[in-house]
Image (tube, rainbow, N blue to C red; front, top):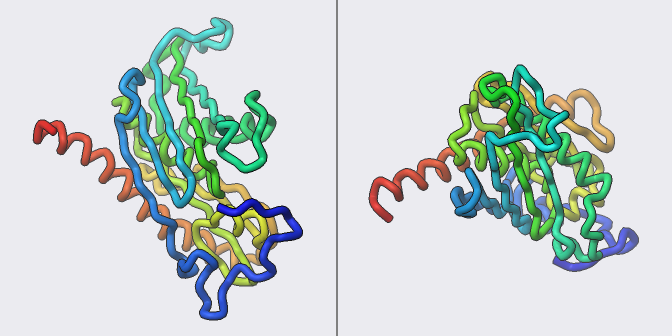
Length: 248
């Protein structure tokens, strides 16, 4: 990646041949790699490389709630801790969690809760720790995706996985899976997540401008992309058990 300040963002984010600056078509995803069971002392864990994003997620629980007053007598609670490493961005960030990290932690928690049977675990908590070690646009979507994968790896009962990806608009054209520069310099950005047990949207945020027709088409593009991401999640989980079966 190249460090850019706002005045140095390219004026055009699409090339003369209609492709994006990184060579992708309008609806192409960045390269994605997923792996589970990567942190051995966690109850469940996963790792994702999504473009230049590199993110770990680890799950612990069910376990005792601390502080105790946060416990709920009729159900478990889900706590998400999204953090960006100080070296994950070019302008070194402070080690303490900032407002944005707290907001994304809450967004991911609310996105994942609908797929968990928390009523089976009263008085306990599940905790997800997400560490972004390299960031380049779409970290909340990649983090939601890898967190769901870590929950499944932990063997926690779930109604389905959750998959997330952003769609948006640059140079007047709708695109799928915004890179960092497209996120910052584009016309609009819309992170979307889906729960697959009911094919419903569990996350929808929006920044920028779109008309109704563009919004409808963007949602269709998001669903197409999310179906691909979902299949990658399933393959990552299957790979673990195939390796166990084969004694690898």
